[in-house]
Amino acid sequence: WLHGDPLIQIQIIINDCDQNCFIMTRTFRRCSDEIDYVLLACVAAGSHCVPVCEIVGVQEAAGRSQKSEPGRWPRVLQKPDKSQQPAFTVSYVGRGRQHRWRCSEVTFHCADWSTCHQWVQTIQEQLSLLTNRPKRLLVYVNPFGGKQRGRQIYEQKVAPVFSRAAISADVIVTERANHARDHLKTEAELKEYDGVVCVGGDGMFSEIVHGLISRTQLDSGVDQDSPEETLVPCSLRIGIIPAGSTDCICYATVGANDPVTSALHIVVGDCQPLDVCSVHHDDALLRYSLSLLGYGFYGDVLTDSEKKRWMGPARYDFSGLKTFLTHHQYEGTVSYLPATGSVGSPRDRMKCRSGCHVCQHNSPLPSVDSDVWQVVRGKFVAINAASMSCACPRSPKGLSPSAHLSDGTTDLILVRKCSRLDFLRHLLRHTNKDDQVHLPDVLIQSDLQSVVTGTVPPRRHSGLSVLLRDTMVVSGV
Image (cartoon, rainbow, N blue to C red; front, top):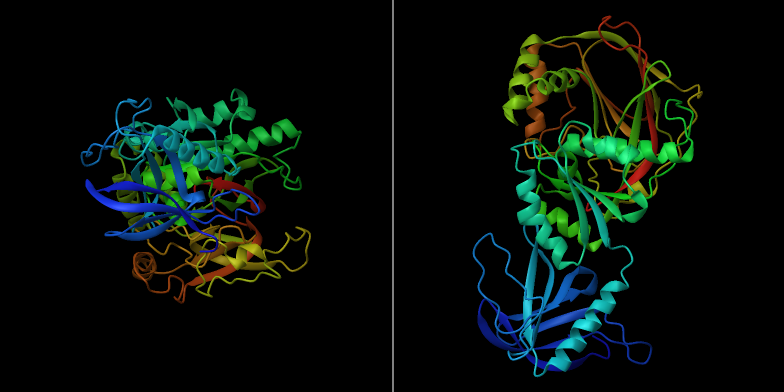
């Protein structure tokens, strides 16, 4: 602590116990009066440092804060009674176990209202300098996804956090499938917002992605059906509040499926670029993907589970067992373009974390006309392309544990024709710490662009092309 001075001798209330304490700021007065850190020092309770960038908000509050009920957010008075003792409450990010964050708070009592106003104004000025923080958001809530608790999760857990951070939100509760996608493509006034937030599962996130990318390309005059076109990056960030069945994307990026944690990441302006893949067939765009492209087993599971959404999250177990017992195998040819100049490898066991050096040194996309295409022919039980680890609570390490979020590659996992027992061994490894791909019938490659072609059943698509496109930025991860 250089040039640090105790500025105000005040009282702090922690767990309803009065403790003598003071605030010390790391201030360089000869240069400016900017506050970089706030040190909350308590004689009896110890001390800790809170960076300004992790302060959620500050509000004036008169009198002693009331003890809140479990699961309820304590009320902060907007217009304090001037006859009571002056005080202000600072809400900040509290870090817990397993990557979970909580909105913690401390209430400071001052000698007079003038001092209280000065502290509140100073902290608010410093927060206003953080330009990466959103001020207005467009929120889509899916009330039907997962356990149908999307509206409740937003109102009880997310909205109070946004309110403390002085973030205004326009909320739209979706009424049908692709409601959010269609609204983003045609009606939403995107220039009025700093970001888009989806409260739902992976399907809801996919709607937002498709709507934003399609709207951006339409406004820019880009033909999405052409694989040779370069996509225009989206200027808005996407926030994810988990309220679905698996919440794979949220778990693989944040490390926890917790609505409050995700909301706090959005508030402080955290962001993470993600690779985007496009799937084309007969010169037409089929869809975009940011997590897993599954042909064969996983494609069949998802197709069958969509018909049983009334079952809730249990539909994946039912459809998975049904597809496993059927044990379909598909004959075809897989052509893929290996990555060149990539720092990472699917087998290097390097986890993708914040500030990942593998993602920072991603290689440029090669030409599709390259002559180094690799070809694999045969019968396959599953053909998967993972652009991220695809981790979730049921599969903590994911299908491809070393896949990176924005390294410019996607991991191609081929499961050749094998017995049910061998395939079961492969599936069981997704739930433990064993090597998921260290089996005789499993091949994994890191590629930049892959094409699935060849002889497949007539009811299936043939000539599918999977192209890795530009990245988009996801907020709150």
